[in-house]
Each structure stands twice: as structure tokens, then as C-alpha cells.
Image 1 (cartoon, rainbow, N blue to C red):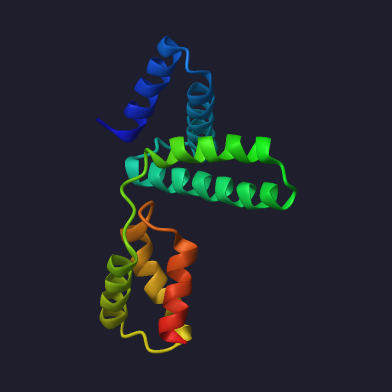
Image 2: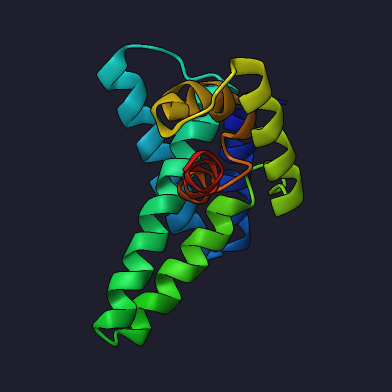
Length: 147
């Protein structure tokens, strides 16, 4: 079963269970999927869907940090809830040691030696880590190793 089918089935289950918060978040996800499909005139596959979900997670994390600065606990709770539901569709997150090993392996494969080679390393790593790691943290780790 594709990820898109799983989301559609979960929307139906949430409707039957009358789980309004979950249903609202799932509808946000399906709306984002449809929006991208209409804009680009394509059918999203699982890889593109993971990228979209990863982007949605990043948006929620940024919103949470902004709401924390504004002391808006009500909005923080909603964003945290949405983030948890969206994360449930992403693959299991990799640990720091696994990410570091992948970075070292990719640096050796590309021959990266300086910060100028960061684009090569990120280009190779992004498909492997999409949805499985925070790319901002991965970028910081690469900078630390190359810098």
C-alpha cells in the first residue's frame, strides 16, 4: 500500500471515529498533496510525498519556536499535535551515529575535502536521508566535518 493510500484510509478512519483533531491534520496533508499535484501536474510517488511531509514537519517546528517566543501555549499545543501526526507517516528517524557514518561514507565517495565540496555531499545524502533526518542538523554536521 502506498503512503498516499494509507493517508486516504486514515482520513476515512478518523471520520468514522469522529476524531476531529486528527481528521483536520489529515485533511491538511491531503490538501497539500493535491495542491502540489495540481501545481506540477504530476502524481506524487512515495519519495516526493516524503519530501512534502518533511517540509510540513519543518514548518511545524518553525511555528512552534515562533509561538514559544510569543508565549502562545494554545497554538503550541495544536502545532505539536499536528507535528506528531505528520511524523507518524515518516520513516523511523536515524540516530546521530548512523548519520555521521553516512556522512563519512559519502565524503569518502565524493572526495570532499573542504567546505566548497558541501554541495556534492548534500546532493548525495539528501535522497538517502529524506524524511529520516533533520536536514538542517545534517548540514551542520557536514560543515563541522569539512570546516
